[in-house]
Length: 134
Image (cartoon, rainbow, N blue to C red; front, side, top):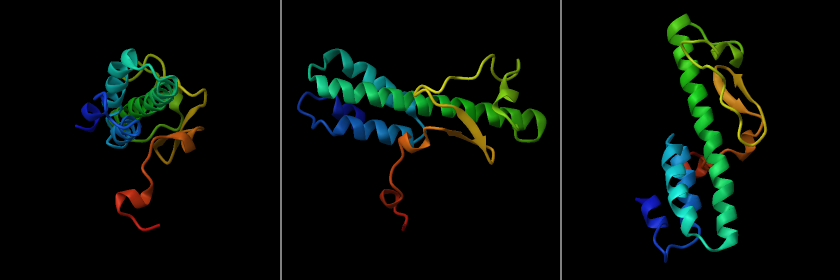
């Protein structure tokens, strides 16, 4: 709903970036990417185009991290353990090649979770926005 609202010509400029952040937080970066791809051809404001282009890269980061996370889960199913290195996921049953980190960093594993050297740039809501106390 928020993504559709962001497509409206009179939508406030903050609505689109918020929709992309929520899509990433919900584990659905594909939704945010689809929204950006549908909006970009009609955007004339260069500043807004730049904002959406940057958000698109951040959503790609989330999408690639999601894919790698799915690869880790598949590895666990097949071998009953976490991979020690991401390169272990490159095998016929999982990946032919690892997805690239779109911001130029590196993906890595930490305690079985996918991380990136650009972790601070990831699209995440602040803990207090989720109802957690700091």
